[in-house]
Length: 432
Image 1 (spheres, helix red, strand yellow):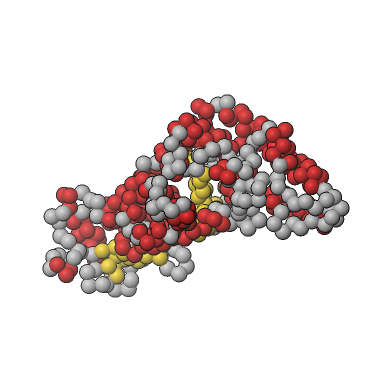
Image 2 (image 1 turned 45 degrees about the vertical axis):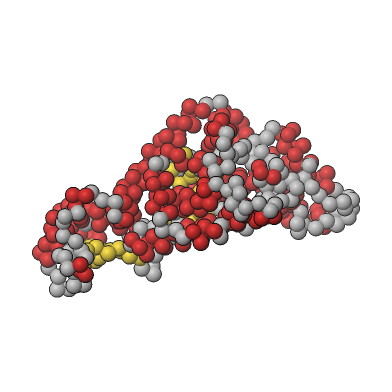
């Protein structure tokens, strides 16, 4: 059974709201329970620094969001749950990716373009008050995703561009340095991709139109009562299309409940009654989570312990992978500089070489070839470039010993002897 890696994060910029819950937290928790899924969930506190200069706010929001995920049922034993800033390999990877990312690609990022357009409309310089963090946001996001070679990234439709940019960056790096990254794909639930807020626009803290996820019952009821509706009176048929109230209800209701609400709209339900139905449906789902959330917020030491354990787990992947990437780009031990080079054009001694690549079946392979091109060793397929790279590293470091241990994963083409393969590995080990 193949495994799909899911990765998602939330920026700790404020108290989590219903949009965060239905668009990220809930589907992520549901996905984490599948047997065929490997899940990575993180608190994107580096991202928060782009727009927030209040340290206490970032700290408080990190606690609230961690508690929200755990209250919603995320099991840290089943997933890798960590704080972004606890993984030093991520900013290092951000720089490696920055060096292969074109400025033109970043110029097209929606957030940056919106800031420029706003400045131009105000007759300011295009980059007025635009910090480099905002401009580089897509590269940091790409590093978050590519560090763990995520296959699927659950996002709202407004974030799809960032996943496409991460794909572009991954493919550029792979083109220059070999197949190291899996180009990710966006995972969107169309019914809840972007939840509307109280005023009908996207629910967002920046618009001040959000409903806090764990608001007390009375506050929740009051906020729902403030959802903007039209002037149609009770008894008049109402449109579900474009109705923020209906869209929020649909995000929490099952198919039968949604159909019933749709019919109620057609029958002319009064807005007060529709809002009462929405309140009851949301509270039905959130109420048991609210109690768990309160208990977690009262135990920050427990949450800190969980996040540090998650960081340790994440770094078991990130640390060796970063070492592989450093070597790929040329950040290497200088004692190898005087060893024979593989650059045939420069007139120096060429060595056997590994080549890693991906086939149309989605699997990752590698082969060991002589300088003249004859293949000495061919691997079976691996599920990720990281696994293929680990196998190559073992062969580089342990030579014939690893060859024996990995026999089931390797094959020699017809006419190639074990002695020839062993000699090639010894030559490579001598040159390391």
